[in-house]
Length: 252
Ligand code: NDP
Image 1 (cartoon, rainbow, N blue to C red):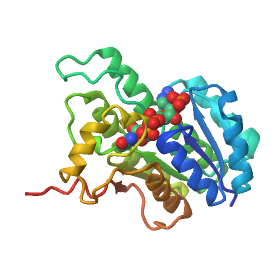
Image 2 (image 1 turned 60 degrees about the horizontal axis):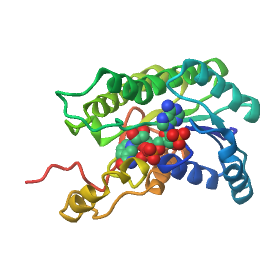
Image 3 (image 1 turned 45 degrees about the horizontal axis):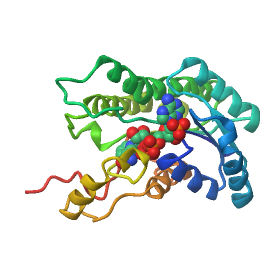
Image 4 (image 1 turned 30 degrees about the horizontal axis):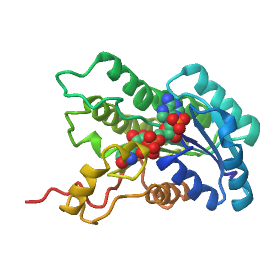
């Protein structure tokens, strides 16, 4: 089977870690973001030279239906087929705001990018898999925020709880087409998203927040995605793989 993957939001942070690892494993990598194409010509050339694979960056906003269709078409045009989708693109609220003050505008923005975008992209690529008899793989990047309540970013938690259910729904639907669907649930990972709360998490990690006493890095998530795309969890679908340093184990 050809190995062409689309990673949303692969230009930086966790997505870039995923792109690097998958390219290293021989996948042709397409990735998207909101930034202009010119900003990624060097990066794509470097990936192609280093790993001897094809690399394609597409400017596309996952929350926009027109962009999602254009995104799929661009990948098909360059690669000819697509065998895996990694829904990674996501945002935190622009302002951390108490639950009693959160605005509808922020709710809509976060839900549109973090939940509606990946849901409908998965629906579209799911149809493509079904129509073309591609036994592909779908991976959603969720968050511990699906189950851990943070009242200063409730809209983010809601969006990730939705991603958790979307993973189960598509696992059920896509099983008949031989397409497994997984959620990777990161803990605290070093990226632009968490740079604004670095001091807070430095302190929490030093105080024992995670059993493994360090920040996660994008490569940790890249390795987990690569494992799933290799088919190493072949007899498994709809499952959550936690990559959080053991953070969610309740302790007394
Ligand atoms: P970053 O803020 O570092 O990067 C976000 C990425 O998503 C960028 O590539 C960005 O592209 C892209 N993106 C944002 N909005 C859109 C959009 N509307 N359309 C297309 N691309 C978009 O975040 P992280 O790397 O930390 O997060 C990646 C994923 O991991 C997210 O889903 C996040 O919720 C999740 N996660 C992160 C954790 C962490 O601790 N960092 C923990 C748990 C989950 P551009 O550069 O163009 O803006």
